[in-house]
Amino acid sequence: MHTRSRVLAFSILVITLSFFSVGAFAQDKKAPAKIDKAQQAEINATLKIMDDVMAGQPGPTDFSFTITPHLMKSRDNKVLVPFIVTFDKTKGLPANATSYLRVVNKANLAETMKKTAEHKAAMDKAANMARLDPDNAEAQEAEQKLRAQAPKVEYAFEDLRFSQTLTTGAAVGALAVPAGEYEVYLVYKDPIPKDKKATAKAGLLKTTITVPNLFTDELATSTIFVTNLSEQLKTQPTADDVARYPYIFGTMKITPVLDATPKFAKKDELSIVFYIYNPAPDKTSGRPNLTVDYNFYRKDNGAEKFFNRTEPQQLNEKTLPPNFDVKAGHQLLGGMGLPLTSFPEGEYRLEIKVTDKTSGKVKVENSAFTIVG
Image (cartoon, one colour):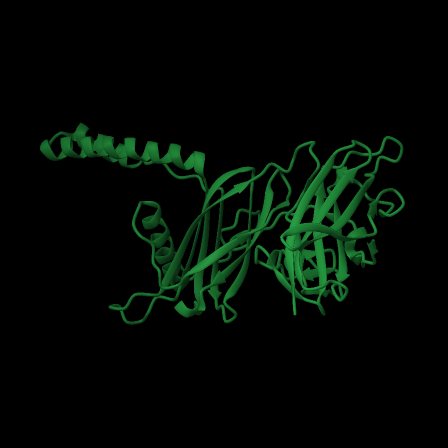
């Protein structure tokens, strides 16, 4: 049984790969903004929290929050990882806070920590020799030389922001890194109190993310975004708009559902959106030729049964814009909107099957959701 769906209007737009650049410390080509003395003090205090935690000390716990990451292609063989920060409101929310994101490649971190330990041992030995023989100029010089040779940690990504006030208990951010396994550190710190005896409230999260390699010949997709909250923008978004809020696809702005199994009402419209990567070009037209099938399965008495499907989405020479060019960085956007009025209450699985008719490759993704009264 076919169900009518609304193919999202932005699925035929040409969207070009972009790199997300944010913050005074983000790794982009923009000149950093000038920092005044008060901001420098906030930076120093925030970095000290981060450095102390990476050195093994416990992090502050005044604020508690989690990160939900998503995955998309970016430029220069990097993967864009937009994320949503969700705060535990019972522990309070930051006000006018400084936030700092630090991303470290785990392989590089292990090597750096090894070098740091070796350097510390050499420093201890040189310092001891200089202390035992204070008149030995060579010993004193050796200690100073070693001190200047301390190894530095190479961070895969950094981002620092001022004046973060989170009245809703959520924030949006992003990072961009090559494929690999990373340790992600994120700290939020309230301003330094005027009372020197008081301590600024802060919270720090440490988590690990694995970033896959999306730059291969294999058919792949971004994160499958499922939502019932979307907004059609009246104008084409700028690069700054997307930098501030990376969940914009063409002229559609969405609020991703964060639950592993999101719940929707029958009155809702289910919206699905995702990018399709690495399609093979058709030998004749040079353009992709793909079909996307959306099949719904419903749990019934403990067993899963086919419920319905929508009309397949066609992405080919006839449906794509005349100037569509994968080599130029244009992205294939899949998606559809489906009213849920005909769905009985219960648990469902949406199977998204992307078929590349040129290469014969198939990519299948699944997304679970529940219809409630």
